[in-house]
Amino acid sequence: MMMTLTDEIKEMALDVGFKGVGITSPDRMTDLPKGWIADVINLKTPEEELHGTKSVIMLTFHSWDRAFYMQIDPPEGKEYFNKEDDPEGYYISYMVSRAKAWPLVSYLMKKGFEAKLSTRIPMKTTAIKAGIGPQGKNTLLIHPEYGPRLGLMSILTDAELELDTPYVGDLCGDCTRCIDACPPKALHPFGITINRCLGYASENPGNDDVPQDVRELEVKLIVRPTKNSYIECSICADVCPIGRELRRE
Image 1 (tube, rainbow, N blue to C red):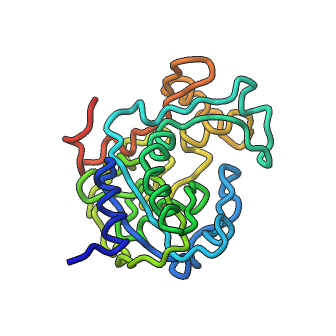
Image 2 (image 1 turned 120 degrees about the vertical axis):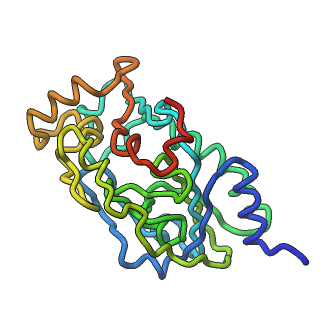
């Protein structure tokens, strides 16, 4: 039996090291967030990113070490930029995801299709639409085997691929470990007070909407290997019991 293009893409994704792969389409994403989200990212629709998009491929890899969450800021520092700027910077998780995903983009283009990597669409909620897993109480995507310790990447293409069934269900149950462990108490079930999140505070050093007690916790808890780098807070992911035995301390 001949493999379909969808089968080939999924096999390639697993071969290069992704642990989850799912496919959805733009018409299933009309209810997802777009525009500026908490002054952190300007989310776009697939069509805004790539005109003629017919399929959205969502990919996840296992972030088994905290080093995957390291961000490297521009030498000038983020506080010198406004939200319309796109300062140079690197997030290790995205860099790894991009490197793993490029062979799939190249393959689609060799087949005559348009294809583009994107991190500007709503990644976590799109992954749910693609059947990879549900949202957890920590607001993160939860893979049934690897939990929330995931790197995400999407590929937009005008290839018409077979779609996966959106994930329906809850993997959290009565567990509240992430909520209980959050130092600034930013979490509530399936929601977050964003300006109390240590990740938001680290990403927005110049914002004055972060409470002083959160800034103090940021200084105390966020690991900074160098002046221009930091390891994003991952406490709410670290304590999740799903896949916890697979991580590296």
